[in-house]
Image (cartoon, rainbow, N blue to C red; front, side, top):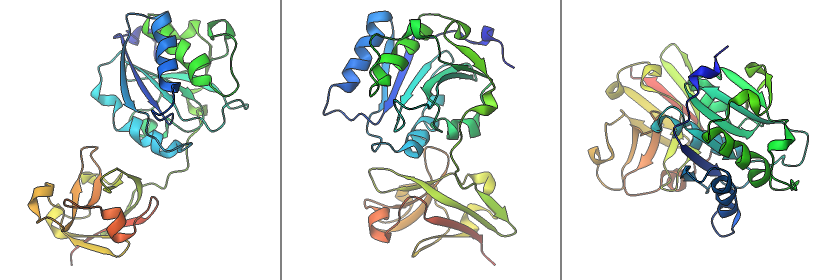
Length: 271
C-alpha cells in the first residue's frame, strides 16, 4: 500500500460535476472550498455531464486528470445516490487525490492507474454543517477537498479501506480475438464524435490496413487527423484521449449514423 508521503498538494483543485451552470450549485461548491482554503486554485473540468450519468463523468475524469501535476485534488460529483448509504471516499493514485461518491465514478481512472490508498470519509467534524441530504458536493466533498489542498493528511480525514473495495462500473472491455478487435462507444462529445477505449496497441493490423465498423458505418483505414479526409466524409481517428473515434469531418457522426453510447465498434484486419 502506498505511503501518504507520496501526497504533496500542489494547490490545485479540479471540479467535475453534472450540476450545469444555470443554477448556483457550482458557485456554492467553490465558495466552500475558498472559505477553507483561500489559496486554492480552482479549475473547472466540466459541469456539463448529463444528469446522473456516472459513466460519462468517469470518462471525462479519466481523460483529463493526467493533464495536471501530481498533488492535484480532483473533486468529482455525479451522485444519483446522494443521501443514501453509498459511501463517500477519497483515494490516492500516482500522486493525485480523488474525492467523490463511491458509485463507480472512478472506474476508468482505475483502468489507467489503480488506487493505492483509499479513505472512507466518515469523520463528520470535517463536514460543513448542516449537511444537506441532497447536496453532498457542497457540504461533504468540498470541505474534504479544501482540507486536502491545504495539506491535511488523508488519514486525518477518514478511515482506511481496501482500495479494491471501491465500486467499479460494469464497462464492456476492449477485446482482441484473432484479426478482430471490439469495444463499445463509451462517450459522444458535443461534436458528435463517437469515442471508444480502443487504443493503437489493440489493433489487429497497422492503422491503414484495417476496416472499422460502427452501426451502419464502414470505414477503411484509420487516418492521422480530421484533415486527412474531405469535409462531410466519415473517418476513424485516434482522438486526443488516446482512443479510437468515429467522426464526420465538419459534421456529426452520432447523428449521421444513428450511433449511441454502447454501440459496438469492430476493427478488422483487411484480408
